Amino acid sequence: MKDTTDTTSRRIVIFDTTLRDGEQSPGASMNLAEKIEVAHALVELGVDVIEAGFPIASPGDFESVSEIAKTVRGSVICGLARCRDADIDRAWEAVQHAEQSRIHVFLATSAIHREYKLKMGKEEIIRRAVAGVRRAAGYCPDIEFSPEDAVRTETDFLCEVVEAAIDAGATTVNIPDTVGYATPAHMNKVISTLRERVPNIDRAVISIHCHNDLGMAVANSLTAVEAGAGQVECTINGLGERAGNCSLEEIVMALRTRKDYYHAHTQVVTRRLVPTSRLVANITGMQVQRNKAIVGRNAFAHEAGIHQDGMLKERTTYEIMLPEDVGFTKTDLVLGKHSGRAALVDRAKALGYTLTPEQLDTVFGQFKVLADKKKEIYDGDIAALIEQEIHTTADQWTLDSYRVVSGTGTVPEVHLELRCGDESFGTEMTCGDGPIDAIFLAIEQLTGISVDCKDFTVHSVTVGKDAQGEVSVQVEHEGQSYRGRGVSTDSVEASARAFLNAINRIVAVTNGGGR
Image 1: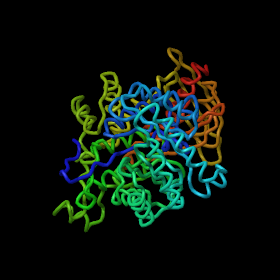
Image 2: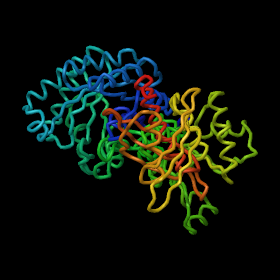
Image 3: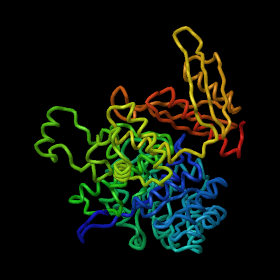
Image 4: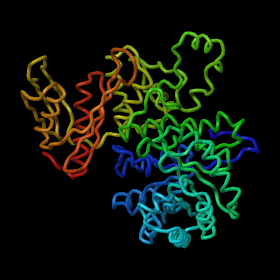
């Protein structure tokens, strides 16, 4: 359900840039299929505008923006461009097939950018900004202009640039805090000044784009809304360059929870926040910290005795939001080894997943195996099984069995059995400096694919000694980065599955590379 609001409440446009600015976060790159999946999830979430990428940046970026524009319906699809003819032409070429298209042009305006990056004077900046907006406006009526590093731009010049961009055809003027420099008081002054001093400001929506370098992206965005901004640019889980961007889930729930103060609302379907957060985390491999506001696993957990006592007497003593409102289920522990398919389907739907019959068959089988290993099945366990199934590539290589003998001061002995199609391959090796390293080396030998492991993380999916371990790996092969993910109550097996998942991604990209 979408938020219900009174007639005095302002509608705030949510501009999601997870697929553009969020993907620029180191290690968060996505392939085409993953970007399209995230785009569809953003539509289900109720996002107004999806910034799908920077089309001229690379052929891959162009392809992803173009495919999203052609296949995703329900949100405005936006492409980013510098104030250069080639950029703008390429952006339009990518977004032209969208149900609703937007071109977002930008040009730096601060003194430090003018002097050291652009080497342009103020007059040249205005001329190029106007020319860029006009060219974009010749393609479509929905044009956004961003004076990059706006909050460090001299006030008089910022007002002059914004006025000229609106006159040229900009329907949204975005004010970026490009380096996360602003404070709430500073941001209030910038937005208020634009509203007071730019004579044509009523012809455009004021937008805000805040980075989180000082941890104030959400606070600055809320201040901008309070000062009159009508659009907030944000990302799922706060992904973005350096310390990230304004977090979509935090800005949306702040406006919803404190609508008495902000008198503003969004069209975001808040019950989709947690499922969308999980999707992005699993695709990018960048997991959400446990105490992350809104979507972290501890966001609605209460351990302190005083808090628990208050919660039992009256929930609102320590909770200002319902966990169900953001997508957590009210009851966590519900399934066991005697549960049937209908119960699993119901729980999957409650967690925000819709499974195909084939996926249900696989997940249900894995669920039964897990139920025999674990006494208690949590929502996190079910979500991990589902995510592993729906985000696994069409595997060429699968794990049949493994055995590792390892100990202090000894070189591990590994026996590994893999399957490739209908063929089985096995090896016995004495190698590595630990059981996981040994498994990885054995997989490389059997598949014929060598990689450099750049990142390896393991964390508990739920709680308890029998909790599933979720392993994420990032490997590099021939200059390209690939991620893999595996889940099991056996952390070594989870590691093997994650490494194989990455190998299968390499095989998929190289059209059958390896054995």
